[in-house]
Image 1 (cartoon, rainbow, N blue to C red):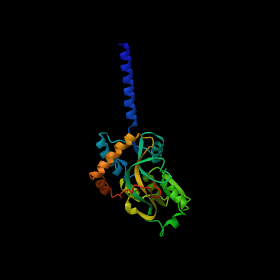
Image 2: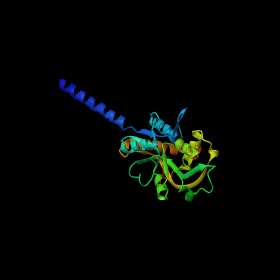
Image 3: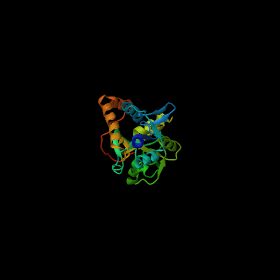
Image 4: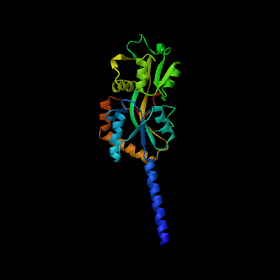
Length: 255
């Protein structure tokens, strides 16, 4: 009798340990204030990727949750952790082997935005001699370095990037065109005060995860996404946010 109780107790402990491991393996999503994909507002999280997360979580019978951190920290946590995902993450050659590229989001072109009062012309040749600002932790800084840019500032988010340009700290902000345009609207900047002056590079953006995420967990999210593709939900969200469909492959350097 006693031996049976010991065996039963041992199995209960092992069973609870297995359940705990399954909970720990569940994917935890991370993000930053990166319109139009995800950002925090007075009404809560918003954006294309967040709405997609809500729909996928509903398919899985889970609560849609995303934790907000400075962008560079979100990327680092995902790269080094076991059950983290981050979005939007650009699929670049140097990142290819560092993340699991789970859910394609959009294709973006990277552009420079300056104030309308900035001198003309202001193309790549002129910008090389000026200070430009990029998002901290973004690999697009390599695009600038490859083109001979030397005076490069980094900001924690798009709000700070636009603020630096508006105050004359930097001549131009360099990021994905749809991201900066959405940030102007989301954070109270007048779009009419800025103009796009040049472009440099493009990329596919994804919801990426840690390479150590359990394959079964990753597959559940992927299956949920594919079901949303088939019923037209993905297309409707892309149209709502005016985003180009990701090509599902590497394309230059990105966010």
